[in-house]
Length: 426
Image (cartoon, rainbow, N blue to C red; front, top):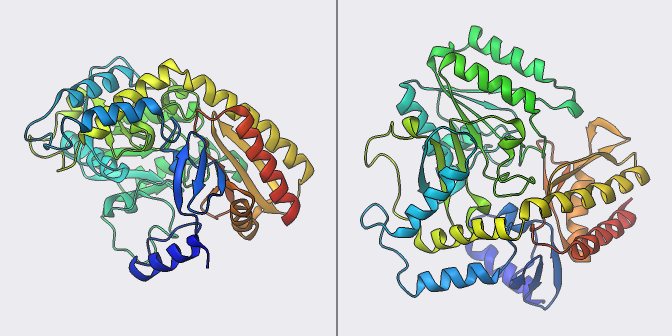
């Protein structure tokens, strides 16, 4: 029995079945865009911990910042006795967030917590209860976040009931025949059939859907949502948990739409692998919650704040937005060549920066998703030495999230391995 198999058996004996793992690959160490397992095998990482280590594994500057913080203290609880790094990080985030309105921030630990708190803030500000989300959206695994999530399996199945006053709209998706006009019409119908706009606290949207399949909301659609929210006093929440921190070629994907959200949720790439999340938004809205109404024991964990400050420095000094665009251009080119080679199996290739997707279908038909091939590609990728992720409401999208610090030659090597995978399976 291999070491990986032994560890998997030990895990299966003590872990709840619901907390599974995609592959029996147990990591020994990782550097930038490469991972080595406990058996010494090397993998090219096209997952980045699900868009968490945008700055690469074990970045020496982040290691140094965290080590220096750890030498002084690891925890005091920011709501009891805070520290300078929490102030400095908030100062930077409110400065960098889109728009000119004065902003404030608050920190928690996970993306789902950020979403929960954004909804709390919106409700406190508006004194309303309704929340609108989108089909295919993913906002986390806590109860409110699951209710907002527009994907049943595996996130919602068996876990209801969910909070009331949550409504879903179709997400504009040209490839699947859903236009922005249809989404806006559905919103108008919602206002006339289910909930009046004066009872809606917030509308939450991912500028690029993550788990839903890496579909980008058209900039004009985002601008129309901004206008509708302004018209009705609805808080517009942009969920930047997967899209943020240079992943799409801008610090935040909302910037492509040229709008200013009322609130933004941030996590994943915010702290280079350390647990941290944030809500950043307009100061008057952020101040709606009473003292003590926001936070958590581990909110603004000192090691994560130290890492987060260094992440922002690395993004700027190593020009990771530009690197995201270069990685996306290379991946789109190579994947489009594979699409031309396998037109009956690869329905669409799409990207925004280094947030890249390849949708797999039967017979070139968008309405015939090929989830079986998708699952096989991910499994065969592990055999070949490249870590891939799937996503999509129908489970038929391969998503690519390499660290933004990845050398282009390593990205190319990973794509070579993917080409071998497809040649073996198709």
